[in-house]
Image (cartoon, rainbow, N blue to C red; front, side, top):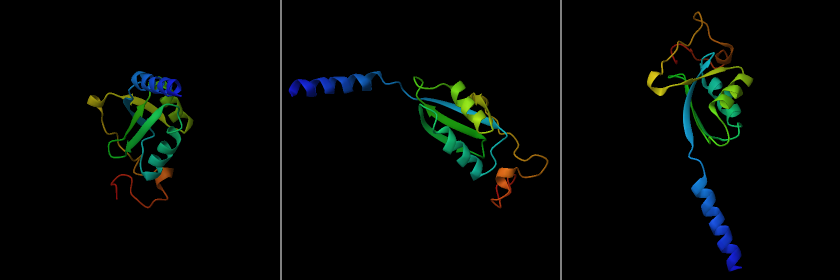
Length: 123
């Protein structure tokens, strides 16, 4: 019994030691996010990519921050997942991040039409 316990303890220790540290990367998407519906669509779909640890979105900054296990996925795989839900994702260098405009010719995109908010003003 003691041998089994010792073996399992050493195995668990090895797994913890050799586990990869999560990597953080930032994406922007086209078309831009406009509302909570856009954020929910991204979060609820991208979280299923193997290796994703955490996703946070910011409509104001037009950025999606993703923490992932580099042993299980890559930025390219994550970008492909965005394509499957109708977005073109571009990896951003955090030092050069910009905020793109949100409305197209002053009109709301389909995702914002039902939430009653103005996508351009945040109201």
